[in-house]
Amino acid sequence: AGAAGSATAVAHPNIALVKYWGKRDEALVLPRVGSLSMTLDVFATTTRVTLAPGAGRDEVLLDGASAAGSQRQRVVAFLDLVRAGAGSTLKAVVDSRNTVPTGAGLASSASGFAALAVAAAAAYGLDLDVRGLSRLARRGSGSACRSLIAAFAQWHAGTGDLRQADLTSYAEPVPAGAGLDPALVVAVLNAGPKAVSSREAMRRTVATSPLYGPWADSSAEDLDQMRAALAAGDLEEVGRIAERNALGMHATMLAARPAVRYLAPDSLTVLDTVQGLRARGVCAYATMDAGPNVKVLCPRGQAPQVAAAIVGAVPGARVITAGPGPAAYLSAPASAVR
Ligand code: ATP
Image (cartoon, rainbow, N blue to C red; front, side):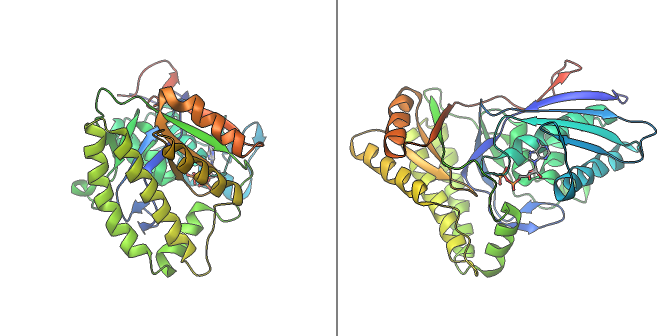
């Protein structure tokens, strides 16, 4: 396929149920352990990439404003990868719109780089299958590789990324039992950007936290058990594993030097609320990422009750209920990702 010149793609964020936390290779974005996520059906990012023959530099628009500094540089570095693969030197205009707050631990970088990977590959005529696009998106932001996949996705830690035999760090679908009808109730407690970026927090945790190694080892076990629980359609077990995995990840950060703490008083209030719901027989389990916002996994039918309990406990919270969402896709020119 030749270069389309212009392409638009849509991707949704994903929330890890077994977390990605810690790289073993910063340049190639290879994780220390595998992870497993649910792609959401809310908070889409739409990104258009248009080649700009004659332009001297890439132009990057995020939510309508010209991006500068590291936000722009991250996109330019990503385009450089695509250009190297496609054998092009043309600059581009990137116009991306998030419907999720940016940099708030709500995975904007995942939907952002998944959409950018799909749109840029199409615009530059880089012919990649889903696995190739997942590997490409990973280079922009690790968790983005999972947003190439619908519903549940496992990102394999992989063996490397340079030799042909080593192109093994990508995401692929994870089968889930037919009876599983999950919702993720997202409690937005603070939509502002985080003080410490995920990248820096991971780096610091791996380098200084005495709890990191033990968590990473236990996370590999969580991954196997999570696959089994999903296959069995056992949402209670899925939730139990997800919650312990997330709390363990936050423990590694609390033990970093200096400590990284993303959870706020309101986050703990939601955790108490979730525990209270469980005591009343509701299947509800929490997971938290690099920010104060809490996501609560529950059966879709119980989502309204969970949402009401959260708002009751934290009156200022904005609550959005998500279900399993679609894979990233090319929306113009209209065609599916292979
Ligand atoms: P995560 O939950 O994965 O940590 P996050 O959104 O909470 O994601 P960061 O990992 O710090 O936070 O990533 C946010 C950064 O990702 C933004 O500052 C910006 O550089 C980049 N980003 C976000 N959305 C887009 C987008 N649509 N296109 C390109 N880059 C984006």
